[in-house]
Length: 341
Image (cartoon, rainbow, N blue to C red):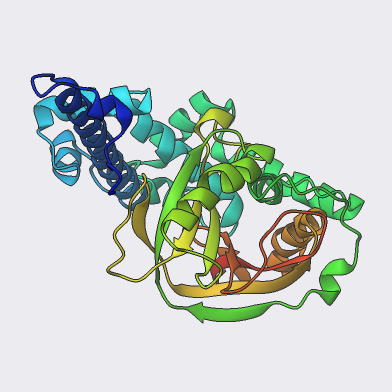
């Protein structure tokens, strides 16, 4: 006797009942809503990436609406609803915050050149906007960062803004750096090819929440999409929490995928830039990786003849690498994008 595959609730419904139809309609509506939200998310991420990549250009409403494949009439309202801040406010904030990051990461670059690189027409306009945001001039802020790095280097405390931001971004790694360890650090200059990645974005305070994001959000998604240890992974932190408000900091948990991979489950496809990176192959514990970031950024970089450029820093987990954050050791490559001073 063949078993009826229909659930009891559907078996009991009379032929005239609309119950089965209602269930299918609700399921279809839920699926449609999920797809629609995923499409909006993809479009907004595309706009945010475009803004960061074109800060030195005019970012008018019509251009950004076209990037989002949306009418100019509706785009401004949609952006405000999605981001929680108006488009003009967001662009001004990103210009000043990226300018602050470049002041620290590119100490030999003139303030005026940095101002122009993030879309300000003059050094005076940049200074006014910077002072409104940080309470000091760009030159004063840069000098303060340099003084802090020098003091931290002399005292051996892993507390510089950039290294602290990155340590927080990758799981709140803790530990005290021991002076002289940078002398034993093996760093290679590597020309990396661009990589296609699918990423899930976390927005919020860095630190322990990112570890939960990997375990609770990324891992189930990766299993669903058959992206196991035979796929390389990346952890990318886009913001410095000493500059950007914690609630607006962005972090991407990524899997390297084929160019024809179809992103699902809220994931977005993107291309991680290639080019020259300083790479330190790390093997150790979650506590020790913070020391490695600190030594690379605070001690190795200033004496290397290089500076950070505008591409993101990241941790790279090669195929087959164990990236667990448990008590045991794990392997990764700490990669920072560099350009000559």
